[in-house]
Amino acid sequence: MDKGKNVVLSERDHIDCSKIRILLCDINAESCQEILALLCQCSYQVVAVWSAREVFDKLNSEGPRAHIILAEVNLLMANDAGVLRYIMHEKKLQKIPVIILTTRDQVSVTVKGLRLGAADYLVKPLHEDELSNLWMHLQK
Image (tube, rainbow, N blue to C red; front, side, top):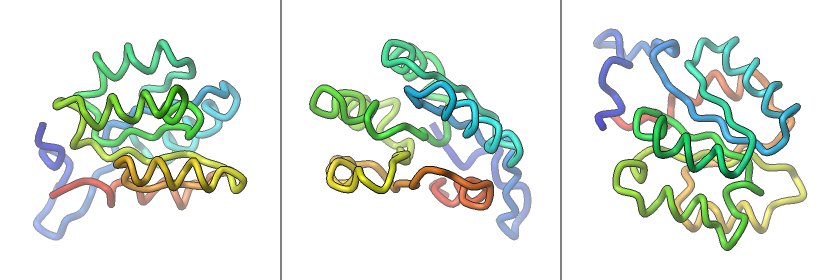
């Protein structure tokens, strides 16, 4: 998947966030809804899931079309980082940047996620200005 295709609008690298697809995965439904609302305010296209089973279903159906995967650390790292390892080893998903959603007290597990291939992390609670810059993770 060419993640830059149809995202860059001009020669000056002006990004149209409404063309960027984000797969949001958070096991806390309330947190998921809050982040979803913020992402929508930034004009991203978002598919949100909040159960482990839904994550695998969406990774297989929507994942290959996603530009960015934004996922809660406990979901990514459960069962010996099963979800993150799956993303990193699945050919159709492995080039999609994974950004970990974490809290301040989850430093060690977040670092492990970064070592396993996650591109970055964001600390909850999130703010619109942090999310408005997610496009910077797209490869050109």
